[in-house]
Image (cartoon, one colour):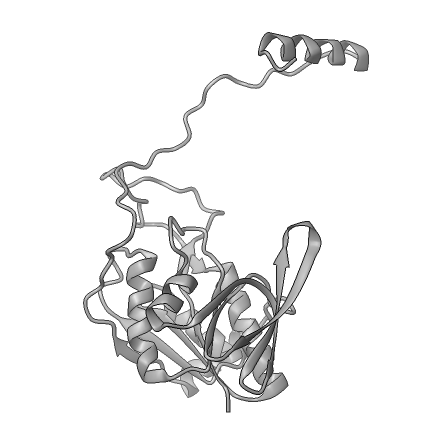
Length: 255
């Protein structure tokens, strides 16, 4: 029976206005809304698709962030067999290196055959979780995956390249895959089913221990883009606008 592990995390909702903390080197998380990373959501969906197609078990694991319980119970409502939370000092912020190390420590006791995680997150500054986790576990990693099937002790994956090219390759298990898109959009589950899971399913907690952020970037300053010159709107008919463009290109030395 194939055991599929899906590590996920929460990221800032980019619909919200981002504010910089008083320290000047981090986002102000006081009122910032966090949501599951879009790519992690696709990883959960791909794992459940594999379970429905080939059998097996799906475990979703996540750090203890505010609002994560709802994400985990939603994953259970979608079809995850087990939901696990890493307890530790995640409230003060963490980088992907620390998170990948925490995941790697927990994975040793879960013995997954396949690990699916989002290929990236909108708050990744360096080192996405997938490649870091694969390195710490000594497993192969393939990113930007858009389709997975299981055949014996290997995964047959579809990987996207620029220009609309799709490659198909085989990877021996165990392995870590960075999911760009599941084979179908993440499924919707009713709130009533999520509430039912809250009554029927429990979240298993694993102590993450002390977080080790070494290897990550040291952010010295964050700032909003500074406005420079405003755009110049060109007026006139097509010939007049074209002539003005030529003048501008000559002024800046392009032609």
